[in-house]
Image (cartoon, rainbow over all chains, first blue to last red; front, side, top):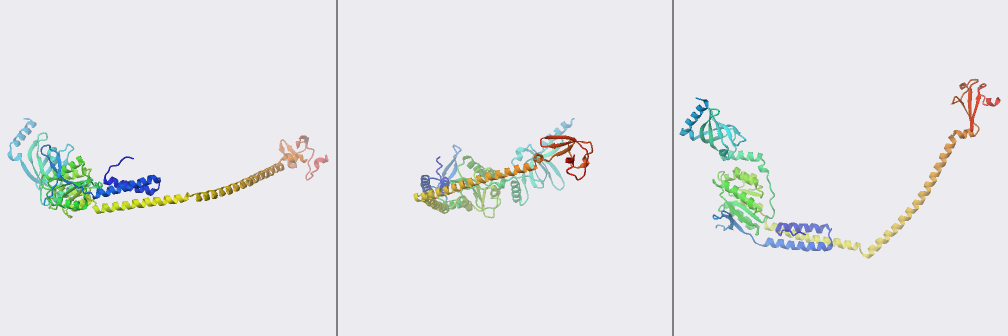
Length: 78
Length: 401
């Protein structure tokens, strides 16, 4: 299987797919169990991502020397 | 003097006149025509008089509204002669709308125009779980503060990048338009929020500019517009993929709340567990079906069934075959009998004969006369004879001879 992107939305979609697959009953016991295991992993990874506070707030500033934009931390006034 | 020389002379004369070189005229637009070359031709008139005007492409490209007949405008430019026709006209550098309610009028005009051209039909899907959001707004305004407050409350792991712009004044429209293009070029964000706090029509005007509308329309990244208060409608709101009444609402529309996502996730996990339980139950049932006892029972039943069906089939087959043969034989007999009965040969065999005259059967005494030659057909040949006499009702007449 091709490894999918490891982001929240993709993982959530994969989790939904796994549920549909298991519901269909079309897969062997071994496959189904490994799907289930994978589903549990996806769930905990999504949950972890959700709980993880990673938010960065930046502001684009024009670097006068290079003329390019740079992302710098945005410090809120007051 | 030639005509051409005369016109040239007049042109030169006019060009020396300081007033005609730089005029500011007010009047009503009429006969406005935009030529395919990009030059605009029209007249400017008031109640008593009118003058032909031309505006070349380079000047016309700076006009920020769509000129329409009947508009009250102010035109700056110079007067000159069009030598070929010997016509003097006003060469316009700028056109501006005049009069009260002018901005609102411009707004309505642009709105109609853009609506007609499908600018308001754009509706990109807003991603449900954005990773990064771009905000185009003033870094010092109330809008950015409101948006950040909502985003902080709702979600802890979505990155935010602010593209600082002026949200009013001359620079605003170009900066906003450039910002939208920047995000589209670098594709770093999943959603763009275009925002500013409330203000007067004049203060919000940058969001009613054609150039901003065009950038929003061209954007491949979904744009949520949150400009002003609930009651403020701007062109940007109409062109954007989603309109939020306020900056705060724009943030709410951009990011699902952390609690909602978490609830959804927990529900999915529940589904997962349920699905595996259902699968296992299903497999258990299936397994029961395959237990040895049940298989034996099933096989025995099936075998019995099969034997019975075969026996029945055999019985039916022999019965059917016998019936068929009998029936065919009977039918054949009946046919042969029928054939015998109707065969004339059979009749001749029994001593009857057929009388013919000239090959036709004779069935009555009227058919023959004395001395007629007739044939008598018997079983094994023909007797040729001659009629001696006829007698009605005597069937033994022939034997009398």
